[in-house]
Image 1: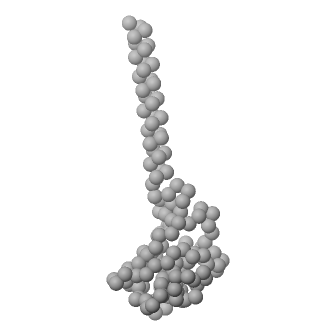
Image 2: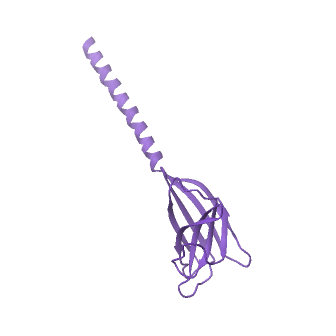
Image 3: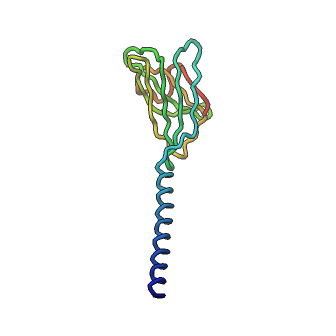
Length: 144
């Protein structure tokens, strides 16, 4: 009878160890797969601009994503578009282009390298979607 009890105890301990180890892995996996909003801020409108927007910086694992959501945007003409810029010490880097829908809503989702440095997010109106540096006026911006 004692050998049977010892065997049952060993099996029980092995089962408990397996459950604990699996639970820790599941928790780690859920944490790695969860989006974490690092910051979310309203962009400030420039003078005579009625549009508004929100910039959210979301982290998933080691990847950062910038999400811009804008509303009350003006209709643009021709090839004009809205361009999002990340600025660091005044130097711009493109972070997506979009055109607003008929209701004035628009936005962009842009992946950002983990080592990217920026302190400001800005939206401009550009003459086309080929601008490598801002040509149009900044209509919305915020420090991040």
